[in-house]
Amino acid sequence: MTHLPSDKAGTDPSRRHEQLLRFLEGSLAPQEEARLSAQLARDAQLQQELRTLSTLRETIEPATGATFDSGFPQRVMKRLPSAASASETLGSFHEALPWAFLRVAVVALLLTAGLGAYNAGTHLQMDGEASLVEAVLGLPDVSMETALAYDIFEATDN
Image (cartoon, rainbow, N blue to C red; front, side):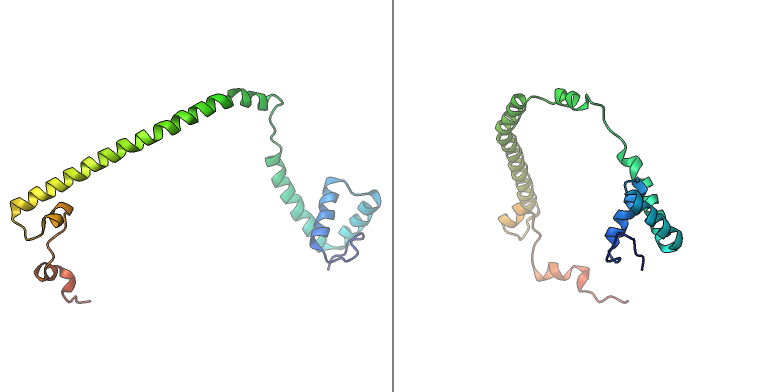
């Protein structure tokens, strides 16, 4: 097990990683840094942990280095609509929404009535045995003869 000089328990991996990260950042006290350097010279496992943390740190740092200039927030806020105009836009949208749904409902009702009339007219032309309701809904005739006509009741050879 790796024991760092300032880690009394010596078994806490998060404490060990914290000290190794502080070593990489150069923020350890000179005495701690000297003791950790000596420990690194003797412990291959600790050296491997340091290399792993160093690689992770190098991978993450470029991604966090991007910043915006000082005028960025003001430019964004200037482009956003004011709260009053946003409120007006949302208000008019909410007022128009019921009318839009009403139009969609009327179109759906007309299409349904047209399809029902078509089914009923086709039923009358074919002299079907189904009731008018079944014909309007477009349901097939339900009888033992039509049920047996489907291939699902025949034996299959597998």
